[in-house]
Image (cartoon, rainbow, N blue to C red; front, top):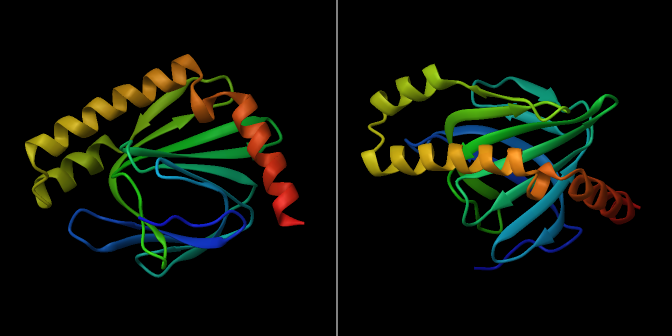
Length: 176
C-alpha cells in the first residue's frame, strides 16, 4: 500500500459499518506517512456531515491515524491546553483519493488535565443492533477502548505533550 507524502493535503473520510459516508474533513496536511502511522495537521478546515451540514474547525489540530490500531486521535490545540477527541474506528486505509476509516460511534474526550469521558455508548448500542456488528468486532472495539484508556493514563503517543509540540512545529514549518 502506498501512503500520502509529507506536505500533501489530503481529505479524510469516515464511513459507517453499512458503508454510508459519515463525515469528510476537506484538507489535512500530511506530516508523516508510513506503513503504520499517518500524522497530519489542520486548522480552520471545512468538515461536511452526511446530512449536508458543514462546519469549520476552530483551532489547529494534530491528527493521529494508525493502520493497525482501532482508533484515531485528534489533538486540538487551544489556549487552555490540549484537548483530545478519540474516535473508535477501523484502522485507516489510503487509496489516493482520501484517508478512510469506519467510525464505530464510541468516542473518548480527553481534557487538558488528562481526565477523560467515554461518549456515545447509546449510539454504539443502537448501531450495533441496526448494522449487526459481529461479536468479534464488538470484542475488538471493547479491547481498543481499554487500550486507548491505557495510552491516556500512560501519556503514550499523542497523549504526551511533547508529541503534539513536535508535530505542531513541523506543521508550521511545512505550511510555510
